[in-house]
Length: 388
Ligand SMILES: Cc1cc2nc3c(=O)[nH]c(=O)nc-3n(C[C@H](O)[C@H](O)[C@H](O)COP(=O)(O)OP(=O)(O)OC[C@H]3O[C@@H](n4cnc5c(N)ncnc54)[C@H](O)[C@@H]3O)c2cc1C
Image 1 (cartoon, rainbow, N blue to C red):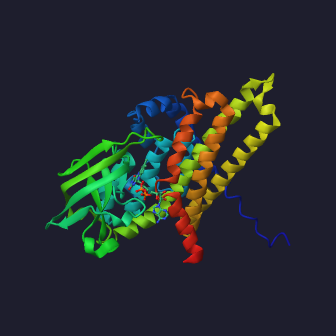
Image 2: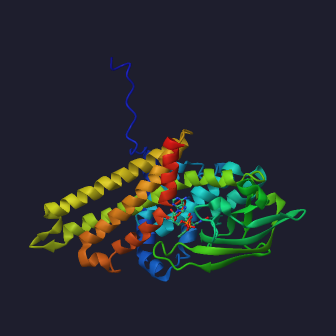
């Protein structure tokens, strides 16, 4: 009988040897090269410039770019592993790499023609940071209420308007920008364009001063009759809403990975601390009350990992994943906040001061419930599945 029953699939959380080596190599890099810089980057609200060439050399800026364009030709699951491994050390660097892979590269690989692919993918794989530019002052959750206008001017489009809160705005050279070619058409006017730093009429504006992920730049972008060649229309005219929506559905899994990594990082710090810190003549980790808190944190991290890996593996298998991605982002962002908060509790007074790493993770966790669709927007997606 055993001959006819195939082996059960491995647990979602088991990694192939190649996946394990990849994740370990990214974590080792983060531990060695990034960890010593985290506090300074947070305080100065700036990414260390020397890190950028290193993450390109590591091969994690073009994970899903096909090898013919200079990328790794790997999967979303690999992006998840990279973002998780970096975010264990610094969720700010985690999101830089996440936006590059799950939003920018993903959009171009999936929706661009061969001309755009051959012009931009090799640069994204080797040296250029990208940004994904949808939100505006008046359109966040209601993203398709955007008003940035693209006017047909013969051989080019002229873009006018202002984008807000754009991750990687400070570092990026390549910007995927959503604008409307016909405001009367509502969401059916929205079109995606590839805009380059230096194009006439395009300026990167002020950088936001933030609560968390402070080393990740969040910028305003200004378009003042910005000249964008027609060859830089990404996908079909009027189909930008589909490009944005479907890309963000996948991007959310990357935010799940960021939140998972953050929770794992907070957990790792805490386990080490409770073994070292003594009160009442014993390590605090020997008290059952503390052990139960550690156990709850471990359970939370495991839930975050299962949800994130499941959503990523479904997407890579070409199976439906919308619901799983929304649940993943909703739950992992709550877990990250909870685990980081509990880490502060277990660090006691040391948890509340900047000299120790966990207060930063608590500040960093908050963004998970806001960007790439707030928690309410995830709840709306989940509820729609059942209630229409
Ligand atoms: C650090 C950071 C980085 C970002 N990076 C990017 C980026 O790279 N690219 C980009 O395009 N955008 C980016 N954003 C923007 C981000 O995606 C938006 O802030 C987010 O989608 C929420 O939009 P909003 O801020 O306008 O909030 P609002 O939409 O005004 O929401 C405010 C509150 O109202 C609730 N709400 C709104 N509508 C409903 C509803 N119908 N039902 C129930 N509740 C509702 C929301 O859940 C929220 O709690 C970033 C933002 C931040 C802070």
